[in-house]
Image 1 (cartoon, rainbow, N blue to C red):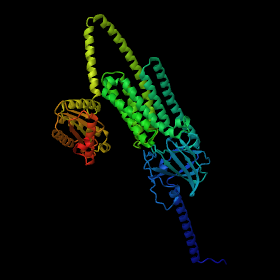
Image 2: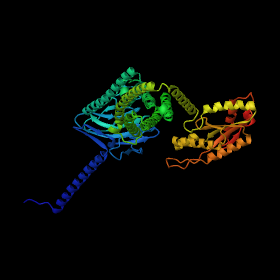
Image 3: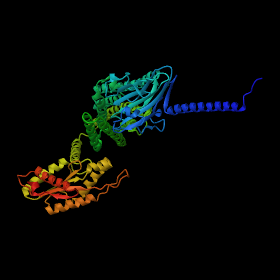
Image 4: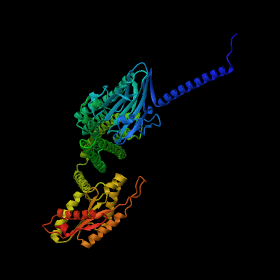
Length: 627
């Protein structure tokens, strides 16, 4: 007889097995959950993978002081403010910054092949440190950047390429430390080796087409210059060559092929070539649009632009790169806008060659603005924003060449028509030659008078300039010595003008100087009295036959009038700026032993006493100032 188990034992065994299954399931669930949580921001490399931007898979950390180390990042107790991108369109573009940035990406290799490369497609980064970390241990450390010789790179490429050092089935952490004086752009792309080759071939093909087209245009226009000796073609060739070298430096091509061991020059060349673009574009514009004779004020602005371009190129050899590149980009944007405006104005004047010129600079303006906004992290980094300048400059170079040809044809036509008209006039107007000579002479005298007036007038404020003031000061000095009549020299300095300029911008600063000049001019009632712009924010006044009391009263009147000036801030974000000025003046009957410079120095010492005593006041020179 077979004995049957008791019901209680059967139920106990069933309960034990059920609990055992529940415990095993919970353990598996916890383990899976832990790995799933760990893999939220991990990128899995699988078979057949080609390329993937890693911006949405990496975390980033801003190190404002640049003192964080890898050991501190690996410390599980460290409380660090890692951040992630909010969308897939963001691509590690932080603009110009002095901070150091760390990037962290988790990679899981589930591919049987190990032919993958990490690419940072921005060739002007100064310092890059790559750390491969597995299970808290640093597997390898690689350093590269454009502050190191080109042959130090792991893979010879204009971008930065690092092989993926993760074996099949491994989980690895990649930490990247980035420090640069250029724009903080770190586009991380994971590629297979075939993808790298294809991408490189595509980029090289595009760059070769662009550089080839530019070089062809340079050689063609250089040949034309040698043939016709037209200076515009020379300026055009220099401008295009500077543009070519600037973009080649920005793309890392020059560092790879021209100066791979010249680390210092690699950075400076970008600023120097961009400055060259500004200088030669200004020269080309002045001559092509005939600004000296048709638009003299614009001509002065282009001279100023050329001065800024040359200064930026020289300063780049001394000052830090991060300061000079932002300054030069700003100058370039101003130059592009000014050239575009000049073309429009000349086209409105009826100058037909300006038509192609306006079209050309329209494309360059758009490309330059897109590049500047991209480097300032306002526009995202993508295929269009990275190549906008190349596209715009290529179209611009072609259109400018057409504009030169059109201008040359127009000049030939004009010369032919002028010759025909001259022959006709010579046949019919021999008897009127003397009258026409007289008219031409009068016009020339008028033009000379206008030129003389322009040469003695300040281009911004419209009052006289320093050259004119110095001549009048010398004349008035000798007249006062001869007639023993008093003369007054007054110096005015706008208070805290540099801070004013920094706060409200140069356009508002220019408005301020214009208003001050007009206000001071309005207080002078005699034609013999002279007001001039003596320096940046400094004005000088020369009064004849004026008593000390009247001179001081006039200075106080001017000071109060300047305080009453109200300038509207175009940004509409700040209070209306208050404007004050400091005065220094001297009224004297000069002796033959004195000199104009002696009187001017006394007024200058009085002016500095006004500044030392709190500004916004009038100070009359004392005997100590005169002696």
